[in-house]
Length: 90
View 1 (cartoon, rainbow, N blue to C red):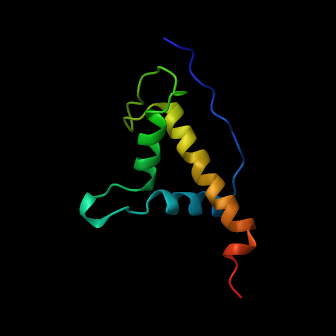
View 2: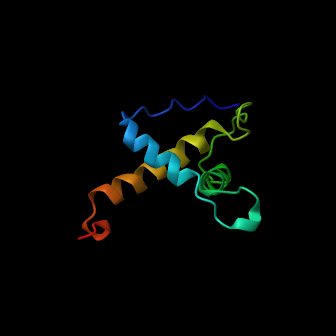
C-alpha cells in the first residue's frame, strides 16, 4: 500500500468555496439522476494513471487523491472565471 497523499491546503474565501461547490453540483444530463460535475471529475481522476493505490474514503466512496484533484480542477475553473476578461459582462 502506498503512502497517503497529503492534501494541498489552499485558503479560499467563503465566496470562492460557494462558487466551487455550485460548479460541482451542476448536473450533466437530467436523465442521469444526479450525476454531476464532481462525480465526473472524481471518476476521471480515480482512473488516472497517477492516482495512488489507496482505499476509498468511507464517507464518499472516492479515493482521497481523486477528490483532492477534482476540487483543485474546480478551483482552477473558478479562478479562471474570476480573472479572465473573456467571462466579464459589460
